[in-house]
Length: 114
Image (cartoon, rainbow, N blue to C red; front, side, top):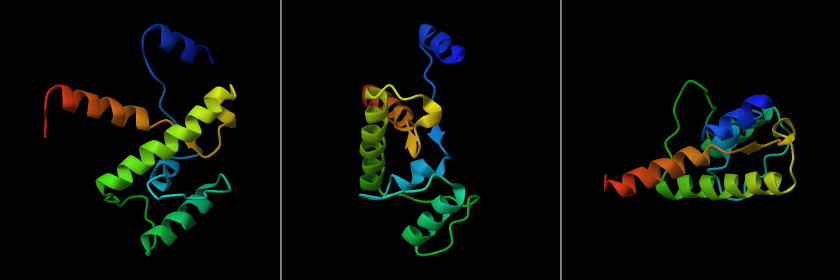
């Protein structure tokens, strides 16, 4: 993964969701047990949480508390994989998408956007 090491030298960060973006969506729900790393499983779990069929094309509105839950839960899993020095392709049900949101929060707080 040479592009990752080259990116680090240039202060780029790789943001990923393994196996799909739905992993990030699922982390918005407290104490979610994701299980199998498959799109079908993710859609089933989201349908259950939403109490209606999950449709990828439709947005999902989350409360601020849920967004914080997603950041905390995904960060915890991501840091556990980092500590174990696990390769990205082996980090199932993992995402580091929270990095983007933390950066946004930092910028908004710095410039006092409300």
